[in-house]
Image (cartoon, rainbow, N blue to C red; front, top):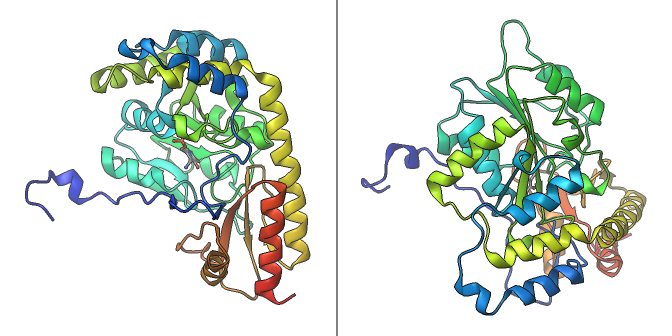
Length: 357
Ligand code: PMP
């Protein structure tokens, strides 16, 4: 513990991201990347953006990207905020919008970054338990007995469970808390849910965050965005401009714009992952796994007779990396990213071998 650290640093719990192994003969199913790669038009645009243009600063307002995103989602560009991956977008939202001196409510099993941001920004937290079947119960997020949230955040589908809350239920939470910002983190929404972006014009307290890391297969480019009322976006822009007024570099801007413009590729590549996921769920259930219903590009599964950590270690011996969380209620589970059909077959064969079935 350094005596030179400020008080807030002592209270921080470092976020532990999924392992990024350096070996390339591994089947990497641990951090929910998309197996098939980005749109070829995005790659062409990134290549075209290298060269002399890199001498120049990028557009500090990211106008071209905001314009294509706004058009795609039927919004105005001033309703869009962009950043270096959705983690950075979330960080700006925590700073600008979720810090009201009253607790931030979020599910007790959820994206592990939220408590880290709370520590960083000194935000009081309230972890709302998921139900026995690992769902979010809408009623638990409505003001109760004089208690009301300072703000609310949850992923939809939730992570790492993969369970989806219907758009109608999301809207009940948003409408039931008109004085609190409700942030819906839709990192995985393109794999089977209806986005709440369609509701932002109706609810000035709703902010929806998306990433290019999953459904657009551009995790390495680091692009994310938020959509909401222009007032929420302006708050986040103020925070951004106090840190670094260049949200994205030139390569990221070029690649992201081209990715959004290639809608057919996007839809088809999501469809492929969904088909593979549904087949994987069936094959794992046939092996005796309990697999939660997934609307994401990963499955969350446990075996009634085998330990989650042990299964994870056995898979690793067979060069397959999946994610295990050492946390209450979920330490029997593995979170497995949906890979290619071939990778999923290798995975299922390895599980059969481990289970001796
Ligand atoms: N939200 C959720 C729920 C996630 O699982 C992730 C990925 N770890 C992120 C946000 C952040 O993704 P990125 O920073 O790559 O956009």
